[in-house]
Image (tube, rainbow, N blue to C red; front, side, top):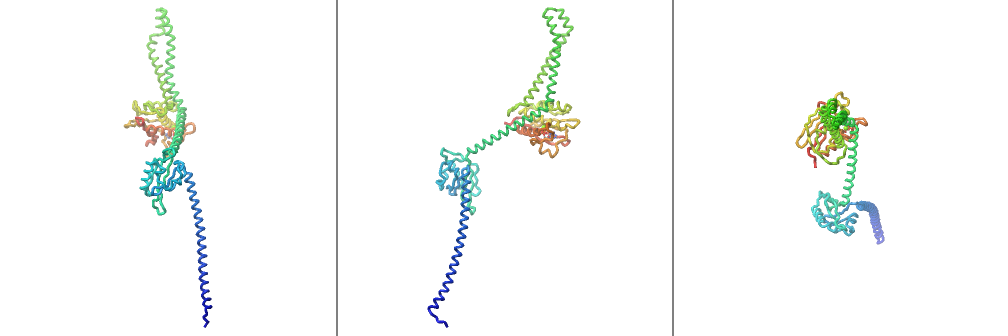
Amino acid sequence: MDEITEDAILRQGNAAGEAAWLDVIRKMDETYAELVGHQVELEQKNTALEEAHSFIGDIMAAMTDVLVVTGTDKLIRQVNRSLERASGQDGAALVGKPLAAVFEAASANALDRFIERLTVRTRVEDAAMALKGPDGGFPLSVNLSPITDHRGRVAGAVLVGRPVGELKKAYADLASAHDELRGAQDRLVRSEKMAALGRLVAGVAHEINNPMSFVYGNSHALKRYCDRLIPYVEALHRGDRKGAEALRDKGRIDAILADLPQLLGGILEGSERTRDIVESLRRYSSDQGGSREVVDLVQLVHTAVRWVAKGQRPDLIVSHDLPDVLEIEAHSGNIQQVVMNIVQNAVDAMAERPEARLDIACRRQGRMVELAFRDHGPGIAAEHMVKLFDPFFTTKPVGRGTGLGLSISYEIVQNHGGVLEAANDPQGGAVFTLRLPVEAKR
Ligand SMILES: Nc1ncnc2c1ncn2[C@@H]1O[C@H](COP(=O)(O)OP(=O)(O)O)[C@@H](O)[C@H]1O
Ligand SMILES: [Mg+2]
């Protein structure tokens, strides 16, 4: 048996202690390594957080809209630079203050009430609010939405306000772009009108030629009569009774005198008709702006058909089912443009047909009038039906069609508070129906 000495006991104890120490040191090493790992991770997260923070900060600073973040306690948590500029106050100093520090009393009250009732679904859109600006009230259009914490509970609200001055400028820009577009459209309407007029020249020339030949023929007769009347009147003036009598017989002065009123009447009528044609041409081509006047639709339809048909399809057979007069309040030049385009399209559609027929019917339905034009052409192909009213859609060769007629007509009719529709007749041919209000919309 070993001798149990004090020395031996100490040795044994030392060995056990060393092992324990080694264990502790190993654990410490491990813990330290873990700690270092955590620290690196933390630093990485911190950098990412800082980046995100500065990213959000940059965005908030770059925003032209005013931004305020509040808690559910209605106290300011954060503001952006735009708000600092608009309110003339320091952002850091505003933190922890009530909304009344930046908003005018009425607006602050309204916002406080919204925040008191804040739920995840609360939204305020385009509310008119006023900021306390350095030079008095600063109008804003405010949107407010809730923010939630990581558990999805409402934690506060984000308020974004757009200076109304900027909104006004955006509206003004929009309005001027709209005006420009309108101007371009007006020019388009005019150019289509002029193009249509170009094709109508023959018809219109024919139209003017008729009354002018009246005037011409009658003036010729008058001139010949003068050759006989003058010597007769001169003989009368000289007191040469016998000579005058002879001239009266020979020149058949009595017949001339009986004929005179009719001749002059014819000249007058011819001149009046020419004047009317020139007047309707002027009305057609003039830009009346938005002004409305009383227009006789029946007269307008007759003129349109004559102008189009005379020059291009003199054999056009038109069956009318029209009253004597049908007056509506409209922009006559524009409505004439619509009707002429419909008639022109019908004539074009029947260009290949040996016989061209157009049925025009008109009826009044309460406060509206309905005009239907049915041609006896091939009708409208199904695949063209949807594109018919599109600008620049045409199936005609260059020089014959612009593809603007129906799109412009549609617009004109809509501006009058009416409708323009296209369909195919079950018996064949296309039908264009034009509905217009009797009284112009105000
Ligand atoms: N009565 C009709 N019958 C058949 N097709 C028609 C008729 N009217 C219009 N269309 C079709 O609609 C197209 C567009 O007409 P529109 O806008 O007036 O322009 P454009 O007459 O200059 O071609 C025509 O090219 C034609 O294909
Ligand atoms: Mg056309």
